[in-house]
Amino acid sequence: MAHMAQNYEERQEFWKPVVAHRQEMQQAATSAEQICQNCGSDYLLGSRFCHVCGANRQINLADSTPTGVSAWFDFIGLRDALGQTTASLIALILGCACLIAAAVTGFLFTATTLLDWQAVQLWRIEWLLGATAMFAAGVLLKKR
Image (cartoon, rainbow, N blue to C red; front, side, top):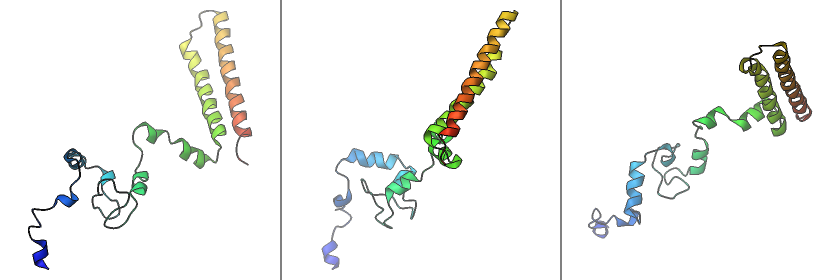
C-alpha cells in the first residue's frame, strides 16, 4: 500500500484552491469567522460546516457579538427585554426625545424680555405635550 502513495509530498495539488490569490487572502485574514468555535480548526474555503467536528459555520457567525454602533443600539434585544411592540418602543424613544428637547430649549434660547420668556415657555410646553402624546401612544400600543 505504501507504493501507491509515492511522491505524496510533491502532489498536493488536490487540496489547493483554484486561484492562488484566494489562498493568500485566506492566510492573511485570520479572523474568528474562519476558525471553528467548537474544535478550533480552520474552515475549508467555501464550506458551510467544519470538516473535523461538523459544526455549522453560520451559527458560529451568528453568535459573534456586534461591535461598534450596533452594540450600543440593540433595538430588538431592548424591545424583547421591555416586552414592547416595535411601535410602542418607537413611541417611547420619541417621547424621551421630546423630553430632552424640552430641557434643551431653555439652554438654546435666552430670554431678554418678558415676551421672549413666554415664547420659550410655550416651546417647552409644546415639547412636553408631544412627549405626553408619545408616551400615551406607547402605552396604547403595548402588548397585553
